[in-house]
Length: 392
Image 1 (cartoon, one colour):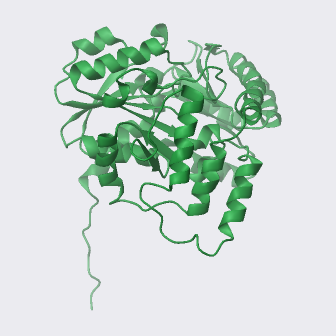
Image 2 (cartoon, helix red, strand yellow):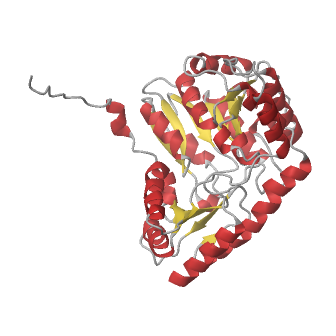
Image 3 (tube, rainbow, N blue to C red):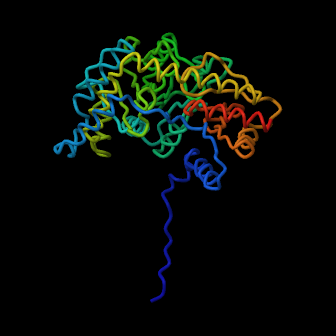
């Protein structure tokens, strides 16, 4: 029998996106390492430190029990939701009903999909920051939304320009994504900014979604959008255990908002996934009670030492940066002598064997910037600095 010829094509939606930059680039880095080139990865924000000892002890103890391996509630176990409500009260003085105003997620990235599916019809508009987290754009495109970028500029402290926003055609805009403390720029929010965002949401009948995983990292004054009166009625806030509890691979995040929004998002989520492994949830609940000393050491002290070396790397590269940045990255502007950022980051990768993220992946307003991750040991950062000095 002659071979049958197939003519299969992927869905048209795949034409709207590319493979995630880090997925592609880390393959290249892995190949370089396989060739013995020993690349130092200062690209991604994956905490290299472990969770607290108490967190791991709970996971180990609970996972040995014979009756914890079944399906779990779609809304998460009560201990986890209680821990998330405790976290918001402790750090932001925000009261949340753990039964109705919190929804655990298998990572915040999943939540971007669920929220968009819950609120945005194909053809509706979504406001997305430039620069901003690429997943806001890619998932919106996959779901058929129209992307409306709004500018974040260095001369405005990487804050939205509300005068420019008011001049836009905001008809059919359903969501506005914000991310403070900001990634990639490290810009802090203020309660004044959050008040403006709530006012904007209320005026234009838009749901503002603030992605807030970095508020404890190198930041002495963490704040939440939900501290603003009325925010819970029109806004959603994401939080995550990946950064502040050193648990990126555990994939535990959550949404905080009003009970109606939670129910709409749950309609989507309950049709897409099931609950997380119970011992993991119990361990995550424990992590949400990490003491002040643990947070000071892991979220402030260690990153502060690493930040000093990252600043020296930036200066060696000839980059300028804002020393008031917070979070687990350092964002800097490249020298005018380079035509574009990739010339510099590729030189650093292939000549110094150090991977640094070019800012263009976050949007056109990042074209002349680069980002250094602090998720590497001081010895690795020191070695990266030594190598870069050698090639420049």
